[in-house]
Length: 93
Image 1 (cartoon, rainbow, N blue to C red):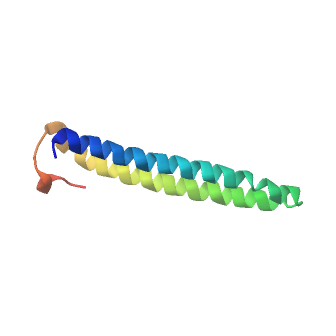
Image 2 (cartoon, rainbow, N blue to C red; image 1 turned 45 degrees about the vertical axis):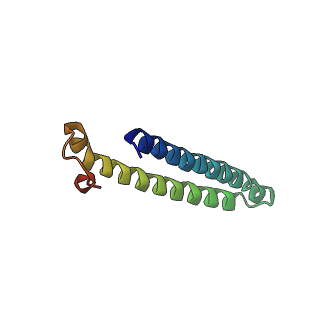
């Protein structure tokens, strides 16, 4: 596998993951719209509480992911910019 093939494959894998993430976002939005039923049943406080929990959990999970990715690339950025060392044994993170 050439370097170009490896990069292309990596991009394709990432694109598939992002497409799946988009599908999950759409499903989460659909599920959140269904929360309106709680208000229609006369329980608006329940809708507020569930929506707030959902947003808090989503934001915490997203923040954890972004912090992890930031840490990985901060650790590697200097190595990548210098272009050294080369080889799989020299790849931190």
